[in-house]
View 1 (cartoon, rainbow, N blue to C red):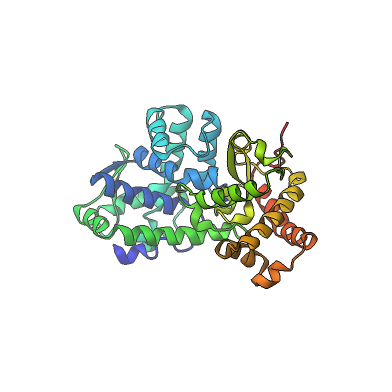
View 2 (cartoon, rainbow, N blue to C red):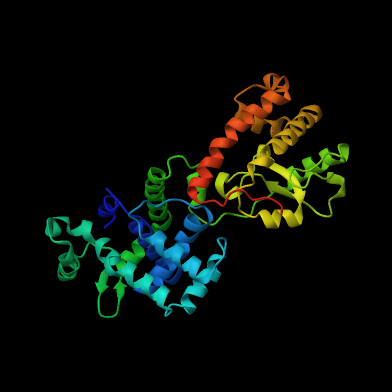
Length: 353
């Protein structure tokens, strides 16, 4: 089967092949089961696609149906974009008989389990009317053995041979990595302007902002009357400080220091994953300039590298940049990012009421 798997993702126009297969191999790894029910595979599939669709707002193409089902479930039940995966799986299992969830499972499994196998029967199904493909695959699957699984229609489950289970368990990382790589190529095609897609395939890891927090604390201790971006009040008057990503982390997926600044903790929670109003951009960039001069003064070269890369300049060149030019260059970097994020569906124009 392994040589056939190499061609299964050729000319893929929908994401279902990737996520159907990733869900199957993950369930094989976790449960070592030879029989997997359709609804369990789909629930696992939805949990895997949740973050790319809802949290990172990636596009899966106009024809793709998986993302539409995921968005419908999120909106119907008002679930958080960043719900924990285990909680989501538990919720879906408990609500698998809900009309919307049941419909999603039925719609996905109407064709997906069969069409995933179609490349193994390319000769036999070539030119066949679409309505006849499923029945043809069912008829052939008993006489062809080099396939990932056999479909049992009446019980709505797939059966995996011991040989294929062993193959998945012995080669799981290789199979998983290969499938993720093919998925990445598919998503890059549909998200050509989006940064760092590879970091948006799965739930984000916990991020550590201890160093930026330390640096901003030092800056504030030397500049206690410097004012924050959103409230325009001195940092020294903060009740509880938080380090905020000016543009959402879920869009940039990095903690570069040129996108960070201190704000009140409660405001950070309120802003969440939204794009700040453009009126806040110039105050933010002015603060960034002042902060970068502080880093130059105290000689934090490692942290300054983020700026050098952004400005494509040396340390000496960066030292000689004056505030108007700094703000102008940063605006040219930020404005296209705002436009892309808005087009992806990020809520814009957040501001304090």
